[in-house]
Image 1: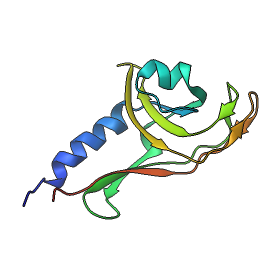
Image 2: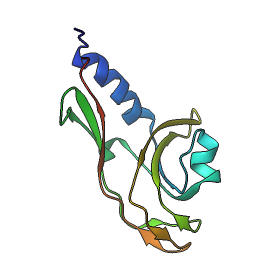
Image 3: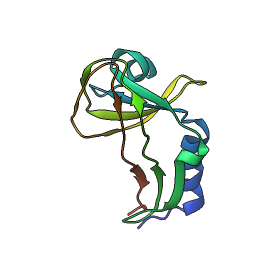
Image 4: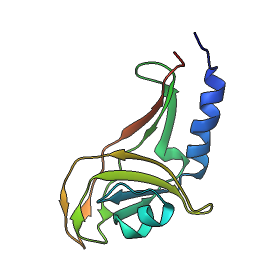
Length: 123
C-alpha cells in the first residue's frame, strides 16, 4: 500500500498552471518544446491562470482542467492529433494529450474543448 498527500499532487499541477502558457495543437506527438511549438504545430493559443481549474480527480487523486478555447487561428495545415501545453519561458514541453482527429486548413479557426490532466492516488 502507498499514500501520496493531495498537497504534493497540487504542487505538480500548480507548476503546470503557473508555467503552461501555450496550448499547441499538433499533427504528431511532440517530444520536445520545438516539436510542439514549431515542427508539428498546426495552431496555438496563449493560456493564462484562469484557463485552468484545479480539483479532485474524477477517479481519485487530483486533476487540472484546461478550459476550451475559441477562435484559435490555424497556422499550418494538417490533421490534429495532439494537444500539448508548453512553457515558453523555460522552453519546456510540459504535457500532451491526444485529441480529436480533424483536418485543419491554414487561415481558418478552430475551437477546442476542455480536457483534464489527472494524477491518480498511489495504489
